[in-house]
Image 1 (cartoon, rainbow, N blue to C red):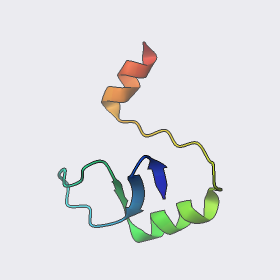
Image 2 (tube, rainbow, N blue to C red):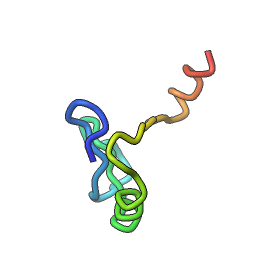
Image 3 (spheres, helix red, strand yellow):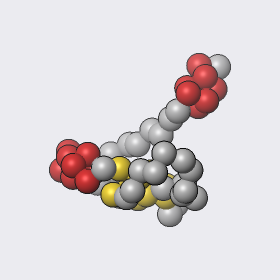
Length: 57
């Protein structure tokens, strides 16, 4: 699923270190569940501990 200008949520290996240029890799079952849950136009917020602190202001 595309969430922003060429960045996607998709199934892929999770090696435990950065290997992507912005896509979010997911386990198959998690990706399948998410795909079945969302509708086109669903808002996606991608965050981590750094963005969480930034968004707190």
